[in-house]
Image (cartoon, rainbow, N blue to C red; front, side):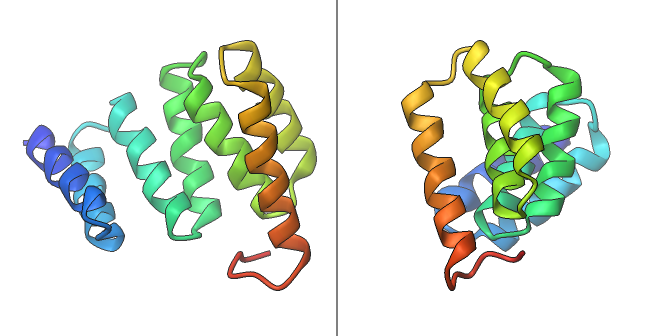
Length: 125
């Protein structure tokens, strides 16, 4: 059953229906809380809508399942940057790069997020 919710969540995310994709991913996570892909995609969906604290929760769960996931570490670094947790951001960024994230790419994204945080932006601080 969780795989049906997960597939539905992916399809809704692809269509840009982020709130609906979150609902499906949450159902999948309820049934299969230790599934990396579910936790990662749930975190990504929350990150996309600017729910950074919840994104961090789900990326943290994903990282506990797969500690060397450069994608989960990188996305959590971005979420930390968005809420001004720069020390935690830097720790995750270094780990993400260590496990294969492209240094230039992750630095560019984090720089953009920090700039938006400083100015007027839709990001919550």
